[in-house]
Length: 125
Image (cartoon, rainbow, N blue to C red; front, side, top):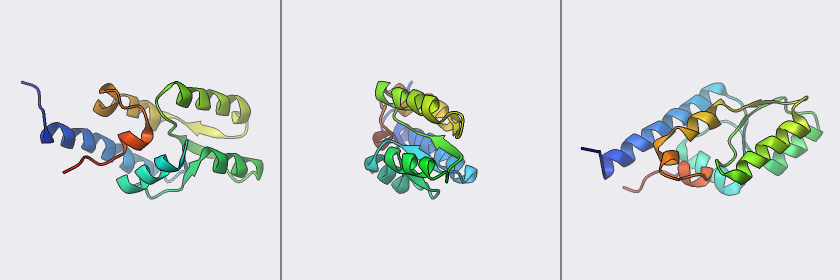
């Protein structure tokens, strides 16, 4: 029998919290698409610097960032953002994509969630 209800929500959330802990241990800036994503990561417990795309572009222009964890949405637009970033800044910035790849394997993603702002939203009690 498949787990449903609160038990499923809790196990899904534990997967997300493991990724939050991984990001906090990496202690690198995390790149997301927008302010809703920043809020969701903060609410989930991410304590490292979280940058939106415009903030990231400003820091790159100033030469103030050399490595970043990429956490764009897991949809077509997020994939395109990543490709564009790699083309534009791949020679000057190291893009860490492991967390994003692991996020794709979570139950929340397999259930169809693609936006960072929804994936990192805590389950309702």
